[in-house]
Amino acid sequence: MTPVLHNDRPHRVTKPLFTFGTLTLLIIMGIGFSFGITRMLLGLGTVTNLDNYSPWGIWISFDVACGVALAAGGFTTAALVDIFGRRKYRPLLRPAILTAFLGYLWVSIALSFDLGRYWNIWRPIFNRQGNSVLFEVGMCVAFYLIVLGVEMSPSVLEGLKARLDHGEWGAKVLLKVEKPLVGLYAVVRIILPLFIVMGVVLSLMHQSSLGALMLLAPTKLSTLWNTPILPVFFLLSAIMVGFPMVILESIYANISFGRNPEMDLLTPLAKIIPWFLAAYGTVKIGDLIVRYSQLDFLSHPAATTSLVIEILLGVVAPFLLFLNTAVRRSMGWLFFTVSLIICGVIMNRINVFLVGYNPPYATKAYFPSVGEIAMTMAIVSSILFCYRFFVTFFPILPGYVPASEVELARIREERERTVNPFWTWVIRGAAVACLLSFVVLYSLVHIEAMQASLTTVQGIERVKVALPVAADAVEAPSYPQRPAAYKNFYLLDSQLLNSKSDDYEPVGFSHRIHDELVGGNCGGLPPPLCYIRK
Image (cartoon, rainbow, N blue to C red):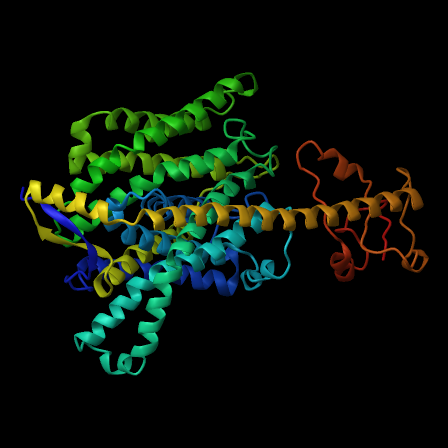
């Protein structure tokens, strides 16, 4: 095979946008989103198999949890190139950023379909709760999507400028905004390193927090996955799957567009992956050994089987395969091996959010409906179609120039020498400063939330002293007899509630709005149930 040099200057793909494959994607999207529109208009029950016991399904476990993990190639490649200074992998950066941008964009869209009251999705921005893991995930994902938009902007601006320079369709309209486009491009090039650093920091935060979400339901999550270091597993697995996703995307683009393989970049990149596999596998197996006395592998054979497949298929097998040099040099074997890692991470997320989730009073086992499966296929098809669109109209994929093996090595060495080490250290310093800034900022939010929670607890304790609730009381005082100074707090003492205390965790929240809606009746439960501070 004639050696090629991957030029740092990306180019647009010359293949047509609409082919048999893209038209098939559009048909799948049309069918899936018809179910989505029905869900938006008529509610979750008309399309999904969700209920009060299984409040989330495949839209959360696959579309959101897996989507966020599989978009990790963006921040891992950005860290490798711009923070650790491995500039030879720069041709892989823009495709990785595009994949991450599309992943997070469609994760956000998929989440809006899953939310019961999707029209309230904006409320966490103005109603923050620093003790909420879900708040941290939501804010990090929202800001990271903005960061990815900035990281994508050079490709978009260069594509628009190219249309203007070559007189392609839309050039007359772009001519009117040529100066703003050029000025915006200059500004983006200056601030881009800072946004890349911010993207890495944000990703490290919310990738782990997705695992912390499931720690809120210890009595419902199987002990096979219910471990205090679940956030560490989610972070390590996201880092582990980052470079495999970059390799998979590169090979997919080569096959789809008939391009020369980038094996001179993918083979050395593949040498890094076993280290992450070893780190994740060691911690995973070590955790199972430490918690062995708490585990019952025979109580749920299906869950145990799924765990074994997750570890063997997604960690052990690819680790052994990557030790073989021939595997790393073969495009086919490389594609197969990284696919194993990706499937293993997908299985892990589905195991945690679905297979290992067991509500104690569920009346039926959850299985996704036809509408849920169709919507999931539509989301995946949308990502593939948008990827094709962007690489067709904007410079994303690297270009090629012929070169001999000697010429290739010489040019690369010269390129590495021309990198200014001063800017490398500036970017690394910015990374450290950005990380510390986020830690300080979120610590302030957390302290504020802790103080608010402490105030609430102290208020409840004062109510308990002022209005003790007798276990054998017959009814709560009528509304006019309630002290006027009291606000917000119910004191509950119900045999029905207490009987479930071993199965469901207590959740503290304000009942003020609930009281206004139901007139002081605590969910229709029989008295004696509450005194109220109104």
